[in-house]
Amino acid sequence: MSDELLLLGDSVTVGAGFSGVDDESCYVSLLKSELRCAGAQFNVRASALDGADTGYALRRFDRMVARLSPDVIVISLGLNDARPPGSRNRNSPEQYAQNLERLTEKSLAIDVRPVLCTPPPRLDVCENGQPAWKTMRPYAEAVRGVAEKYNLPLIELYDEFVCREDLESLLPDRLHPGRAGHQIIARQFARTLVPFCTGRELETLPPRRGPNFEFITTD
Image (cartoon, rainbow, N blue to C red; front, side, top):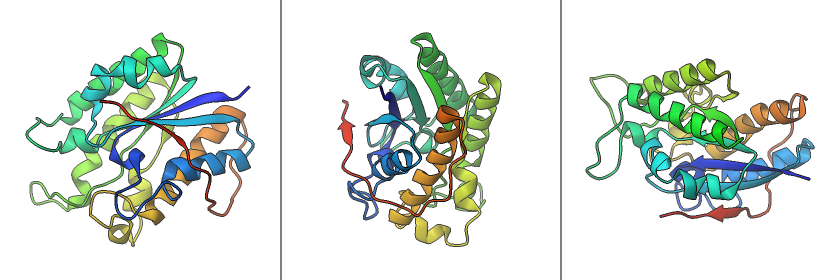
């Protein structure tokens, strides 16, 4: 029997419709192919909403997580904590970390194994005169701190993106990863999830396209 893997996220996890990404080229679909090729038995589902942040996920936890009864959850949020759309107040890195801890504890309380993910950078805002890509750095550090505190697996997106010379081309609208960015995300997810669930390291595989995924929308 396959484990239920739930990807809790925002517009990056929604994928299709942003920066030229469609259902086949989004990381959720690519990840399904990566996991299948690596022999990791997962039924992958996404529970995501454009504009979602950790506060929203906490308020909608029953709908977005609990009622779906996953075995493993990847919490991939942060972009909208740092810079929410509309008139919502941002969550400071400290509040973001507290929310991640609450999401972790709520997941553990229903026997769901959490995996945390550092958010990718965003280039659409520049604060305090620092380079735009540094906006998300305190949030990435917050994720690492929570992962260490709870001894959780960590998927590293932030460092994987910012170390690349082609960073701007990976974020065509300066916020959402394009197709090449989604390939990077899928590979980073697989590198953590395959050893976590099978005990085997992920072999070097060429990017593959998988079938359409089951997508859960929430309000």
